[in-house]
Length: 149
Image (cartoon, rainbow, N blue to C red; front, side, top):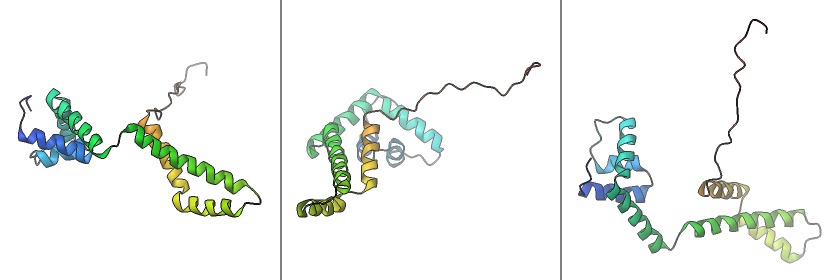
């Protein structure tokens, strides 16, 4: 695939933004009937790294953000709100002698949020901020034996 701009590259760029999946965007933009999944993945990666395609994908993403008024910070703020609600619910649940308003708040929060929402929000923020890097552990190979032990 060359650097020349084509209708297929435009369709591919739009589908990458719409679907969030480069391989699927390639399948829907080009004839991939004779390609293996590995070849499709590699071709999609190569195509996405072409300067014009990469720039078009970025441009389309910016247009989408602007149209929906959603950006990274907005998403993080929504997840933080879910986390705050869950923390408030836990605090209220620990209290004894709740007022009528506090009991009402518990029922409202229980309807809004579940533990899975809390964990999902933490997971999403962690991924968005790149905090889910695997920890590196040094492993020593002790499987070989020597004459002395």
